[in-house]
Image (tube, rainbow, N blue to C red; front, side, top):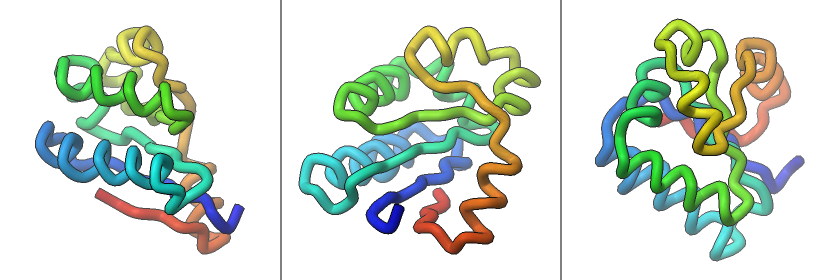
Length: 112
């Protein structure tokens, strides 16, 4: 989809989540900058998302406004947080092939 943005979030920092990832994704939908936004949680961010109340609350807010939040299953399984992420509504799936497809098709990808 041409008007779709994927945010690959790999920086495990609360402030970066709150002041960039969450804020930009939220405004992208509410201000109609993008029709669809997907956030991919990858690496140590899975641990932060499972443990930080600020991040958990932010993810719940994003899910309420139709933003897709998904985590790399390999990462979340290895960090033992898949269940915690699923409990807050995060989709858990393997992202290697999906990310490769996004890159090969030159889709809109923002890496944080």
